[in-house]
Amino acid sequence: MSTSNSMTFNIRIWRQKNAKTPGKLVEYKLDGISPDMSFLEMLDQLNERLYAKGEEPVAFDHDCREGICGMCSLNVNGIPHGPDSQVTICQTHMRIFKDGQTITIEPWRSTAFPVIKDCVVDRSAFDRIIQAGGFVSVNTGGTPDANALPISKEIADLAMDAAACIGCGACVAACKNSSALLFVSAKASQLNLLPQGKAEKDRRVLKMVEAMDKEGFGACTNTNSCEAVCPKGIPVTFIAQLNRDYAWAMLKGAAAEPKATVGGA
Image (cartoon, rainbow, N blue to C red):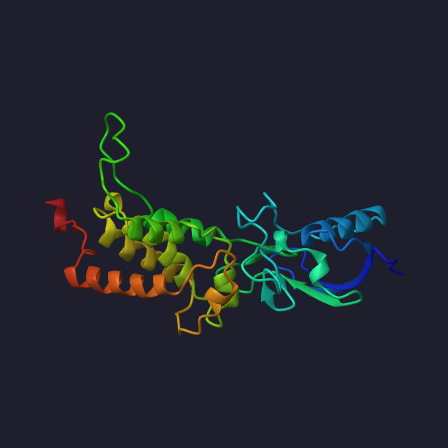
């Protein structure tokens, strides 16, 4: 039973032994929870009690617990990162829930993010998309002066807005098609907008979109659900920019790569 300064919750959380084993929601009653606890601290409490009873703790991703790394990937009551806006679930505190409330916790739901165990999913697809085109060529030599390439404040601000993406995958989890376009557009734009990123701009866009499609992410149908759940408030205008960049790159034929001739001649 909860006291005046503690709360009780009915936790329904996804348990799945591994990728090949079917999973299910398992219920736990959790009392004595401080309203000032973060959501992940509440899960720590659950795991401590499961461990004390000799039961398997719940596996979930976490790292910085400061809204920086994007590791804490949880659907809470059907909403990626929970009901609070523009925060990760590790930044969410239990006081936003009602005492006695049932809280349903699930992993990201996407074919491209297969479940590893319980609420941990494999998001390495994002890494492969970045590897496909996320780089900038630089000349060797001394470090250039900071003002050697003048950049307008408008462009600098846009690039910084795109760079705010932490790659958590909430956009994919919220999209009915499991589209990754908000993530890809942000990661491409943070380089494409700057003078240093212009040299590989066309190649970068084509390769990243190609990698995204290969990973099995769905198409964007402009429901804006990705923007609604993004903890960093990345706007869907970056998707429009990516579409323009992609169309222009296709028009220029930047995707063409030299082909080997018959016989290696």
